[in-house]
Length: 131
Image 1: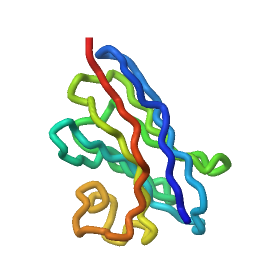
Image 2 (image 1 turned 90 degrees about the vertical axis):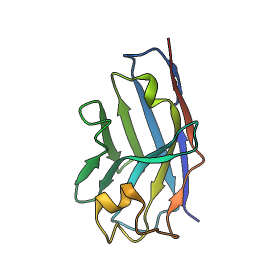
Image 3 (image 1 turned 120 degrees about the vertical axis):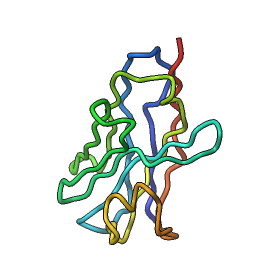
Image 4 (image 1 turned 45 degrees about the horizontal axis):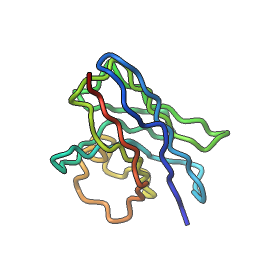
């Protein structure tokens, strides 16, 4: 079975940086469409960034210019470099993979519409930004 395991979360001050990792195991495909979501304390889920195996990426407007998504094929790991963190970035960050390789496009992946019951999710890693 496919497993996604996130790490790298923590507590930082505003303006700080963190690098999240999502280790992928058991993924049987050579192509991929994977990304990061975050779940706020109010339990809202927001798509943050997505990357596919064609090296196409898309970001939420709220993180453009501050976050970078990348993938290391040799390590089977997805990364999210987060710089200039703000208190509103505080959330549980989850890694997700679409086994269907985002058939509705990257924007659809971030919106989670149409719903994709086949999406694979990690357990999440907490990011807290406060002074």
